[in-house]
Image 1 (cartoon, helix red, strand yellow):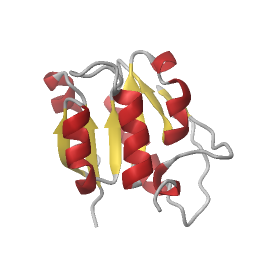
Image 2 (image 1 turned 90 degrees about the horizontal axis):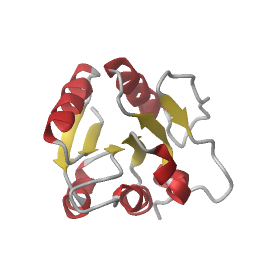
Image 3 (image 1 turned 135 degrees about the horizontal axis):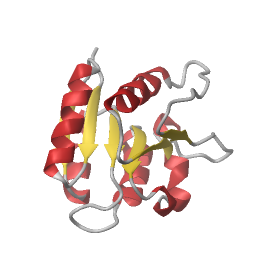
Image 4 (image 1 turned 45 degrees about the vertical axis):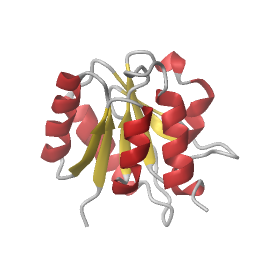
Length: 147
């Protein structure tokens, strides 16, 4: 089964660029969302989310990331030029891709996210332009949130 990616990005040209990269990585795009409401509405269709922080409805990305991980068991990766804004919401994500990004970085992180499942141990990889968030006790990542 092909994993589906939710792109949470309000700048349409950036979203379209990410959509093309996702396709090149062999995954499908479940939806593109520009704000919190659209992201939540589309979440059930997706397995991985690439989430910008500052969206059409303001700096809602960190909150969206936590909701996607907690309520939908989605593997969240933030994509932002402002990683310092993530704050405590880092516990909901695998890491952050820093903008401007390279397509090779996004592809490598998507491969990493596909491998990061609950049934096996995985090691954080060194990927240029990506900062992984190390797991911590009480971490809210992916399906650890799912009840």
